[in-house]
Length: 265
View 1: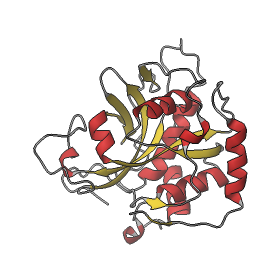
View 2: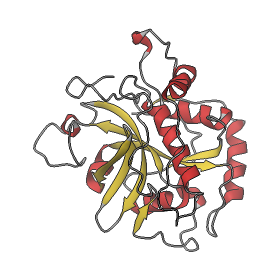
View 3: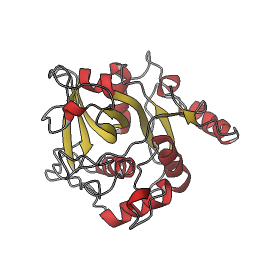
């Protein structure tokens, strides 16, 4: 889970899992009714420091992604005219406690620092909450559908992503393709980020990871993102064109179904 070239950061996303019960964003969006998202979406609000939250020491990125999703959701309730917005702070030890609770890490036992499964973490998030915050649902996105991705960033503040990190992204200023290096998906490892900004003219997303916002091109993101989920918080208010009643019906249906978690192909 560690990176020997850049020892101050760690990865920690386990390979993508498949669950036939996972709901998909496209089912709840009526594209003929919902407004078009703006071309530039900046949910980061200019914030530079989001907190490392232990991801320089532990492979807890799947928990960090949850924490950053909560930070963005809370920040979205702040008056946009406020000039110096700051995300709510989280103590790294508290984040690592959730890593232990949800992913099996035992403090002091490095062998148990094995990362986490995004579907497992989000299911625990929905059922148990995270530091007093809860989601009513999470819905899968498609990294190759840029219009729905823009909608997800506009409607929900961003996307909780899984990336099969290529080795060439180690130390890169922008996560992209075509550097003439090793671009094998997952050759570096798996990583969880929370994509917070979406710039259609510049064809770039901004991903919160390791305490700051990391830029990635659309082509780099589309190629190496292997899973993504929009987080729908309990107090979220849907616009016209989003079928919240259908979503709540489907969530109730999911809760009655047996689990079908398996390794994805």
